[in-house]
Image (cartoon, rainbow, N blue to C red; front, top):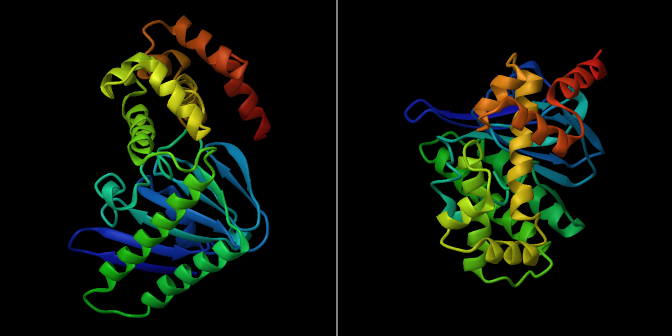
Length: 281
C-alpha cells in the first residue's frame, strides 16, 4: 500500500504506507522525510541507525530525517511519511509542542506504547487519513495536514503522561524541549552543559534538577549520547576515518575523540566499526 499526496506548488508530500512494495521501500532512502511507524499488528523488528529495534504490538516510533531505517516488506506496520514542506516540526512547534519530545528529543527515536483505548483512537485517525486520500479537491492537503497535526498533539500528550511528575508547568516543559532542540543544533561544537545553560539563561544545576523531574537523562548524558549517535552513523554509513569524524564532531585532537568514544561505548572507533561490519557478514 502506498497512498500519496503531493503538491507541485510547494513540493510538499505525505504518504500512508505499510512498506510492502518497492516504491514505498524507496521512501526509506529519502533523507528528507519524517516517519511515524505504528506496529498495529504483530511484533516487528526494524533497523534504526544500524541497530535492531523491536516494536511490540501497538507501539509507535517517531523518526526524523536523520534516522537511517530498514523495514522488512512483510512488516505490515502502518506508517505516515512526510517532508518538511508538508509539515515543519520547528515552524509549527507552537501548535503541537512535539519538537524536542517526539522529534529531536534524544539520541534514540521515542517509542510510545498505546493502551487499548489509545490504539482505537489512533486507528480512527489513520482511517480518516486513508479516507481523505480518496477525496481529490483543492483542500485535500490542508485536511491531511490537520489530521496529521491532531495525531502529533495526541502523541505529545502521551509522552508527557509518562513523566514521573506529569503536572510539570508548561514553561518548565518548554525548557526541556528547548534544551533537546539546542543540543540537536549545536552538539558538534558545544559539548558542555554550561554552554547550553547559558543559552537558556539558567544554571547547570537548575537544568539538572528539571530533568530529574521529567525522568529524562541528565543534561550531560543527552549531549554525550547525541555525539556518540552521530559518530556511530558516520562510522556505519560513511567512509570517513575516525580522525575525520572527530574533527567533524568538534574534537580538536583525534586522541580526545577516541578516548571519549571508548569511554562512552567501551571500544575505540576503529574496533567498534570492525565489530559492526563483522556482524553484517
